Amino acid sequence: MIKISTNTIKNLLLSLGAFVFLSLPMHQVYAQNKLEKTKVSIAVGGKNLFYYLPLTIAERLGYFKDEGLDVEISDFPGGAKALQALVGGSADVVSGAYEHTINMQAKGQNIQAFVLQGRAPQIVLAYSTKNMPNYQSLADLKGKKIGVTAPGSSTSMMASFVLAKAGIKASDVSFIGVGAGPGAVAAMRSGQLDAICNLDPVITMLLEKNDIKVISDTRTLKETKAVYGGNMPAAVLYTQRSFIEKNPHTTQALTNAIVRALKWLDQAGPSDIVKTVPENYLLGDRSLYLAAWQGVKEAISPDGLIPNDGPATALRMLSQFEKEIADKKIDLSKTYTNEFALKANQKYK
Image (cartoon, rainbow, N blue to C red; front, side, top):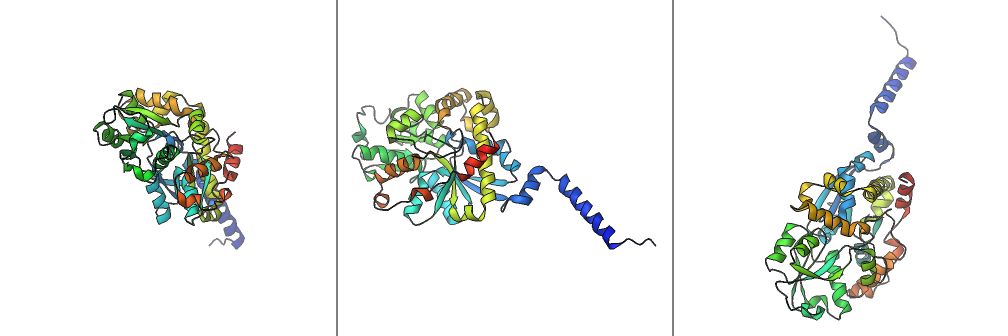
């Protein structure tokens, strides 16, 4: 009988452990050593929109997996519904409008954005050429039905702001949730709506058939500044501040994936986009989708950093039509952080 010393057994076990460790894919090694939470649920309202394209790219190209993350994305009809998922506990993170962080602080909840996806909202307010052929001014929208992705979403906020600047209250119109896909197009073309506030590719599809005419447009930086009076952060990843504090490495991994997707989009050509996004995103018209992409490309953030003056612009906007926010002292420094995006940019120069 061969006797094996205790030290020999220990060395064999250590060697075996090292072999197993080295045999693991690098993202699993990374996850085991750094991430506090590897499985993350993300809620989004209208995933097919260009507004959220960086999220889709990060998912489709495996950037989340490369960071050691197992990400599950749930799509909702609008940003307000995605926010509800976070508050209700069914989502860890939301891919949604930055403005929600301000709204939630006014309600006593600490929500923080940690990486920017869009530096222009890409939202367009337009009227129906079918229902309102004699449209003259915003005053004509009083008492009318305006289609938005979902009541309380960034589209209804943008519409409310534009109306408020013209002295029209949000209560003077009816906001109808129509989502951000084929349903929105169908609702407009069937005459169910008098106006619409939505994003691309929905807007470009409606414009192509002359179903709508634009009232207010934020698809470019110039147009965004004309509407809001400054830089306006759009889509971000946001979550409870407590989640960030408990899971800093996980938050960094999420940010890394999005910033990497932003860098990819900055260099991508039209064919790259079409090959990467799901077929249903094209809404049955590839050339129209690409035309819409060219119109909003500059709205995508190049680096994931929220501009310093952006939060103040968003607060001014919300204060125009939400008394609850106008009457509250909002600490904007608690609504966002660029800490993680700065580190991600060092990794993906």
